[in-house]
Image 1: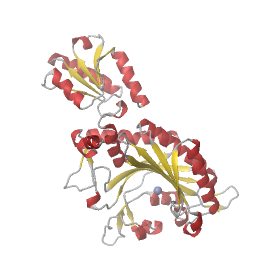
Image 2: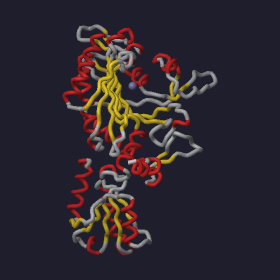
Image 3: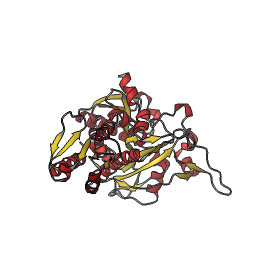
Image 4: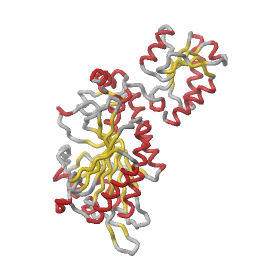
Length: 408
Ligand SMILES: [Zn+2]
């Protein structure tokens, strides 16, 4: 297991597979991504974005630097110690790099009037935060100073909390399935009834939402643990712990109820009876940090990406110089259909070009010669299979497109 973990270390694989790098002149904890890594990043991000949009979540956009005033209101300036020092500008307020997104979401909500009919409002933003982590604690993609969150804040009425959480659980379940992270458990953090003065917010909301969290997790049959006294002072929380193929546990998704920020920012909606009420905010991240999630995925798959995630899904290897033109046309055809395909027409022997692609764990390797270009069946080398696959061009295209679509 330890040997395998070393082989799969994402810092090692990140270099070998040309996914990302960290450059001293740019800074520790500030990874840069090569094209193959950036493709992976985009696939993972887009997957979450599409899933959210299908379920009524809408995007917002926020800037990366902000006046200190915002963090005075939110309380971060007084309490949060991972913020970078401010930028001093002549005759201007101090500006800070944002270490989290919640305050921006609150401010944007506050700029408009909201009625009970509009809620729940599900706002999302995939955006980068900057946190000062000690240099000794930085590690590859798993501990960085620039972390991108698949962040979301739902502004909800108290009676909608349960159904909103349920919707989030649906998405978490679908996403873990697609990344084959099937072994996970949930920590339910609730308040300590012996220490009631520690918590703020409506007692009835606490009671009902904690009961709903447990009920929802139990109904799905998911393994869980209840942490009494582990809730934040402003609301109960769910944390998802997932195991990778090597059995190591990682904390991924979080769902956190919040009765504090709506109070601090004086958020309101107009209720059915015309009175002004406070919404409850639910903070939610499914992947957590995209960088960290990619680090986990690199080690989980060990570079053998499922077809839909493979930065290169197929390599075409022309037998001879005269087949390059035909292979090129084929590449364009597959590209047009949305298949990420490369062509290796280097001077190496056919055998060594096939081996090179196989060593990179490319899912499909297709030798392109007279037969293949003449309309006869293809002989496709499938990753992990001893026997080559004999298949017509049309059937191969259908097969790979289906695998991409179904994320298999
Ligand atoms: Zn938040």
